[in-house]
Length: 443
Image 1 (cartoon, rainbow, N blue to C red):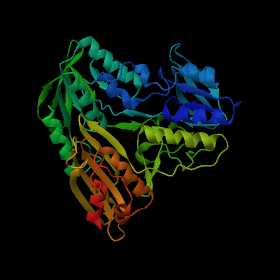
Image 2 (image 1 turned 135 degrees about the vertical axis):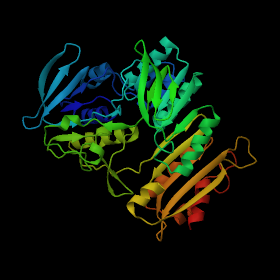
Image 3 (image 1 turned 90 degrees about the horizontal axis):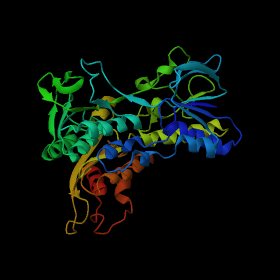
């Protein structure tokens, strides 16, 4: 078995196959220097909350080689797939040479890459996109070397918000631009506006509805960011403009792509070519609410993809059921989470729905540390089936999204949530949990 990509999906699958088939030959090609790392931890490493980048590595290449007998070859990039002859062309980056490796079965786990449009000046030093652990290390080292005072973030999604917090914690002046009318496009604007207000109150200069035009530089280093409305000086730029699936290796093969250009797979993670599988951020998933193929790049999904692919690659028979689009993050003390479909997405589907939006407290109001929480819950008109939820609030807020995603996955109605025997004590919740309070408004 040959695996392309040595992070979450690729190594989860390889490890599962090794446990099931101790004697099988497994070769993993990884173009970077690291395997099995927590890319989600990069903003916190950059901020200084994680002492060493090695703490983000779950397992190093030599551990896979010596303890699991998985032939991990870092700094080796697969540049071509010959699906008819069942072989891949590999470039040894250090030696700058190429060779062909044959396979019986192939797993493509190439992940995703930051969107990096070809704006004028984008090649200047000090402009970074975050995807691999190495890119996080590069940002960390650049900050230590150049001590930037003014940072500009382009894009108000998860990476943009997390990096805004990190750079603010490093005492930088932080400006965030987004061409959209809101931050966090995966949420409805009324909920996103709560986030934007808190970010501005915390010291972030936030400019929405502004399109990036170009970058200016001095002596090869970025000096300013220019939009269609203003010029902002910058010593450091973080691009948080989204990511795209790394599916280029399918070009020239019979492997088909689907949702948002990701590799088309069935629920067993098989591609359209027998013997070739795909998992992780490069592959499609099935959306449990939309009831159609989708593409979601998240570490949780990638690890589950890898496990399912590994079971099937080693002779098992299991399906990956699908995703709800669940995600969680924070900006300083403000917790943010969402799952299922937003109002905007439901408008596109034509499904008739009801919404409830409530404000409550994370704990009993009289208990110290109780904070504000806003819950938005969406149900299907008529059936009452839960279709989506969004939460913005303070300590203890965001993980309540897990109650909502469980309800969606189980096909539960708003009344079913009201009826749940959820736990209660003043340090943890009001008598009526905020999610149940929202559900009551839908019944």
